[in-house]
Length: 148
Image 1 (cartoon, helix red, strand yellow):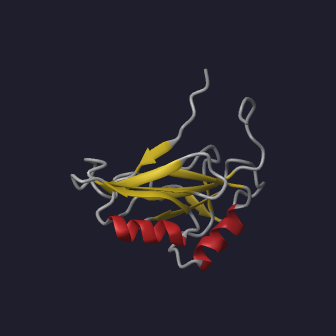
Image 2 (tube, rainbow, N blue to C red):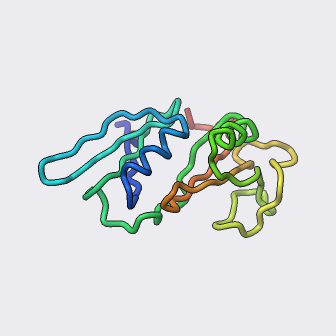
């Protein structure tokens, strides 16, 4: 049985502002529905992704900006960072972790620049949406065994 991640709910304070931000990233607007009871659901999908994000009014009880560690996998973190920066996104410089295994939470142990050996899974950049939901770009050029 396959279990595929389809949607991640992210908490936002202003649906229109969030929708504008994610569209600025180049994400496709899949849906924006409002029900009679005021429930509003917007769904957007990053380019090339099989999973989407949804947010809206009445969609989540979580505090806006509380979603952290949301990963976007890219083939080239330097190019992906440059693309987002060219779209006006406030994004960190590319970094790797001092320990070399996985990055620490927050900015602890960040070393400027991509992984010196440019190993897959080891180079990152980070940004936040207007509410503070935290995203990480992670460069993956060769998948671990068992991953498609």
